[in-house]
Amino acid sequence: MKIERLLKSWVMLAACCLSLLPAAELMAAGSDAAADKVVATVKDEPVRASELVAYIEASKLPPIEALTDLIEQKLLRSAAQDNGINVPAGRWSLEERDRIEAALVKALPITVPDHIGELVVDHAYLKTGADDKEQKAGLILMERLRTMVADGAAIPAAFDQLQVDGSNWHIGDHEEYPATVLPDEVRQLPPGGLSSVLAGSDGYNLFKLYDRKIPVDEIRLAVRIYLLEKTGELVNVVEE
Image (cartoon, rainbow, N blue to C red; front, side, top):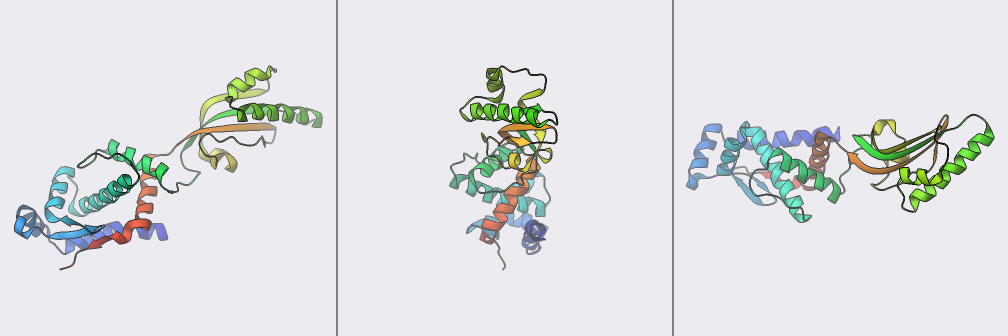
């Protein structure tokens, strides 16, 4: 599978780099400026043994994982700076990295599958009976509601303006739903987007999307895949 091959390439790269420079020699090179070997390059910038040793000591990661993480951070830093995203100097905390990756998802054409995470929506639901006349009357009311929301009102405020009996209605204000339970049209809305009136088995639904809450690990996976696809060729093992 393409994604699996892409993800494995990070570990393969790190293992290849470090196999060229045994651990004892790596630590010695890191403390000897004259022998400070280049173990990899990222966008033509060298990653030297001293930098890797410092990163291992700061992160407490094993050498292969540390080099993988260091390369990822360099690519993330470059992508963030290219897109005007503020990044702190030095090694980032998990919270800083989460913020930067979330900003990159918004700034770049990074695809997170639309069934992932939770959606924050305003939701109107009108239950109707099986009678055609009742269904038509319900559809007219829901279309009126949609027009008011399209003109700028929030769904709860627009419903109040309708001044109708609410016994067959559900009006939700910034409700959170797993993306998997919502219709495709709703999952594909941009933030601020308004769905059409959607017919269900026993009524009508209307959704306005406010936000997508995507798990951090899914954001990291999407960013990693993007960087591998777009800039992976800019990372090279230095063979001596």
